[in-house]
Amino acid sequence: MARTTRSAALGITIALVATACSAGASDPSAAGGSGDTTGASGEHRSCIPLAEFDNGDVENAAVQEAEFPWNRDDPAVLEGFDFSRVVSGGPPPDGIRPIEDPCFDDVATADEWLEPQSPVMVVEVGDDRRAYPLAIMTQHEIVNDVVGGEPLVVTYCPLCNSGLAFERTVDGQVLDFGTSGRLFQTNLVMYDRQTKTLWAQFTGRAVVGEDFVGTELVRVPTALLGWAEFKEAAPDGVVLSRDSDPSRDYGRNPYPGYEGSGDSFLFEGPRDERLDPNARIVGLGTDRDPVAVTLDHLREEQVVALDLDGDPVTVWWAPGQSSALDNASVDDGQDVGSTAAFRSTLEDGTELTFAPSDDDPTAFVDEQTGSTWNLLGEAVEGDLEGTRLTAVSRDDTFWFVWFAFQPDTGIVGGGTTDA
Picture 1 (cartoon, helix red, strand yellow):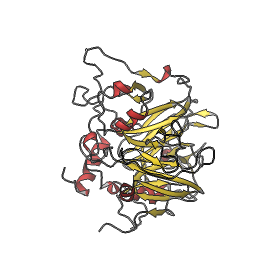
Picture 2: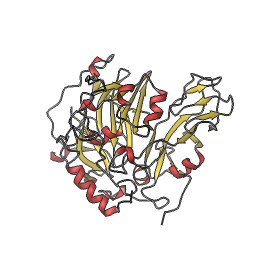
Picture 3: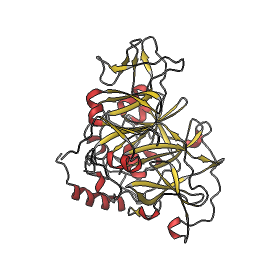
Picture 4: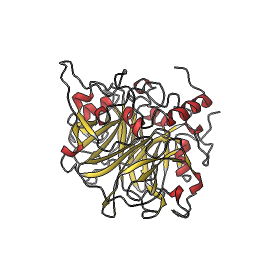
């Protein structure tokens, strides 16, 4: 499609953030709508509520009597954090409605509406593998879930393309999270309903409030993949169902044209001209050793080896995932591909090096044993079949937001501005 101009995309984004992603319902009978889970036989199939999974029914901590920080005279603020730069994105708190009681489909059911290139966010805890379609996540941004018995908050900020998950047990209390309606550096600001403390999604850190300021949620590695890769790698996995909120039209992208023009929406943070602000990067590392691998470089090389915080890491790219932020239809966005990042050292101390497979564009081969690996870091053929690599936390995001939160970052595969 023709690329939307930055100013036009800004206008679209403002309108849609304020309306289409609010708590109002869409017509479930529309094409791609979420109300139809009727198979060819005409029999309606229900999704599985979270409470029916092992340890899925958890009790959240009690909600305290508290006001949002912007209504307090003197809220506690994280040292060095500029509360004045937390701005309204348009909707009120929970105007972009989180999913509180998620419901899940098996892979076969989800395959009836997802396309091979449909973007999904993948979260794994133990043997529990779950996919969260970005067609759903763009309209809810937060899912309060329990994965592998671990209470998690699964989040997606479409303005940053950041899909992150965190443990939501803090000081022995299970918190549940909502959307504050505020942004910081164009990034989603969450709040916990127990204390109304504000949390920055990009860091998982409590930044303004009372009880938890300075606390950082424990991050759980995630991946953004094309549906075909998850379906093949995790046939026994489960998928966030459209019936979690059957009122929505999940085939529609609320942010058409945002790809390539994202930093124009309420961004007032620092900039760095080594890369175009809207260049896609894979951000890795901690505050001690952050690095951004440009997607252009990763797409060209397909495998990039790094030393990250003292550990050897391998970063991969493969085709087959649509951008959720490009076309008016999520599935019709440009192919931005899927990335993965893993520690290169096995539990026995063996260090592996990798190359793209000559036989499968979405697979990788280790040069030590010739075993074949999928994008979830599992050896599917060869001497190491069944072995799993340890996933590394990363963020598939835009340069402008990565630099805003990680100004000391290095860059792999770039360093000039696209004029």
